[in-house]
Length: 199
Image (tube, rainbow, N blue to C red; front, side, top):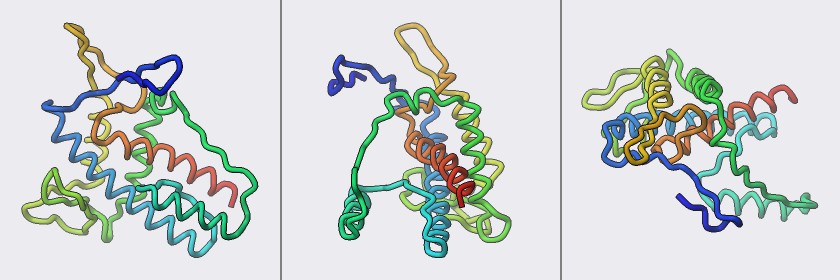
């Protein structure tokens, strides 16, 4: 896919999951990671309320960003504002780091009390949820199955160029359903650990 807004024009390789046998697995993984990200956001919001230290900067919409800017402006506490675009950050992530960081996020989100399973009614669900018991007529994934599914998808991403099939062995598979959650959670884990060391 050409990035026409760049000078000179650059290219981003996109994995197409349309009409592939991996699409159901990608959708399931996306819903699992969505629930995991929501759980971490809930936890980080609680920590912020008690400590005043922010540990997660993931936003789901522009309104969150506008509200943050308005808060800074109301306090007159910002002197400079800068924005950065890391053009190769996600495409250069080592797969071992990607898997390790996601496994950390999965391990912290699941527990043996009230978060044994991520459950959702269908692969097109908008609201996956944690539960302590298997839910009839739902897809249910425990920590082990979630870890296996994510790792398997990372190791089984392929590109086809003409008659040549290539395996992706570095970077987040951009274009896969779960890619935005992978990107968010990989960076979140490193940021969280960094902030914890400062506290």
